[in-house]
Amino acid sequence: MNNPVAHKGKVVLFANTDWYLYNFRRSLALALKEQGYELLLISPPGPYGEKLRALGLRWEPVPMDRRSLNPLREARLLWWLIALFRKERPVLIHNFTIKCAIYGSLAAVASGVRARVNAVAGMGYVFTSKDAKARVLRPVVRLLMRAALNGRRARLILQNPDDVAQFRDARLVDSSAIRLIPSSGVDCTRFNGDSSKRPGSNERLRVVLAARLLRHKGLFEFVEASRLLKRRGRDIEFLLAGTPDHGNPDSVTEETVSSWVQAGLVDWLGHVDDMAPLLQRCNVMALPSYYGEGLPRSLIEASASGLALITTDMPGCRQAIDHGITGLMIPPRDANALADTIERLDTERDLTNGLGIAARAKALAEFDERIVIRDTVAVYRELLADG
Image (cartoon, rainbow, N blue to C red; front, side, top):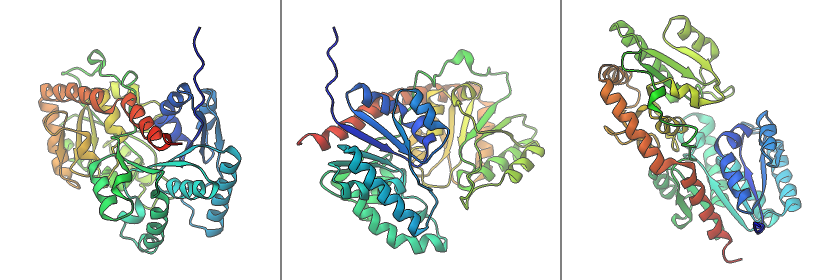
C-alpha cells in the first residue's frame, strides 16, 4: 500500500498568458502536485486554461492586460491579487515575466505570503528599448523591480549568465538572491532526435524559424537569406512558424508576411500548437535574433529534436549552442552571414547531421525538463526550509 504524499502547502504559478503556463510550465505544475504541493495556476483568460484544468490542475483567470499602462486598471489588478492571496493563503508565489514578477511580488508582500520566486527572461522592453515611452517608464519600473525582487525570502531565477550580470550591474537585486537555471526545460521524450524520421541527405533542406513574429527575432534577415539563396540557385525550404504579436510595436504585420509568401520566399505555417512533429520534418533551426533572450525555447526544442542550430552571438542565444559542435553562430543583423551558413549546411550534410546529434546530447545533459524541475524545487525548499 502506497503512503500518501505529505501536504507541503499551496503554491501559486502566475504568468501573463495561459499559453505560457500550458506549454512551458505544465510539467513543473504536475511534478509539484505529485510531490505534495497544492497548486493554483493563474493568468489572463484564454483557451489553454481549460486544457490545464483537463490535466487535473486548478487554473483561474486574472483580470490582467499584459500591455496595459492604465493606472486605474493596474491598481485594480494589484488589489485583486492581494485579495486572492489573502483568500488562498499560499506559502509561495512563483511569478513569470517582469510584469507578473512586479505585481505578484507586491501583492505577496501585502498579503503576507511567506516566499516568492520570480523567473524572468532578460530585462524586458522598458530597459532595452530606446523609444520615448520606455525611457519614461524606466525609473518607475526600476523602483518597482527593486521592491519586487529583493527580500530575505525572495529569489530571482535567470536563464543565462549575461542576464545575471545585467541584473547585478543594474543593482536591481542582490546577487545572493539570484539562481541560474538554464531554460524552462524541454520534454526530451516528446521532442526526440529519431534520425529515422529526419529528412535524408538527398532531400531538400528544410530550415525553420519558430518565434513570435517580431522584427528583433531576425525575421527580415531570415527572409533576405532566402532571397539571396534563391538568387544563387539554391533549392531550400524556408518555414516560418508563429503569429504576429498584435499591440507590440516590433511586430510584423500579416500583410508583410503574406507578401513574403507570395514572393515564394517562405512558407508561413501560422501558429503551430505542437512543434514536435514539425521539427521532425526539418534539418535546421535558425533564430537570427538581435535581442537579448532568456534561453530561447525554439532552440532548446530543436536541440532535443536533433536539428542543427543557427543563431546569433547574443545573450541567451549564445548559451543555447556550442559553436561548431551543436550549431553555428553568426553576427546579429547579418543576412549574408545567415545565407552563407545555411548554404554550408545544405552542402555539407554530414556536418548538418553531426551538429544535430551533438545538439540532442546537449539537450539531454543540460535542458531536460527533469533537471529544470529538480533545480526549481530546490529553490522552493531553500525558501521554505526554516519555517
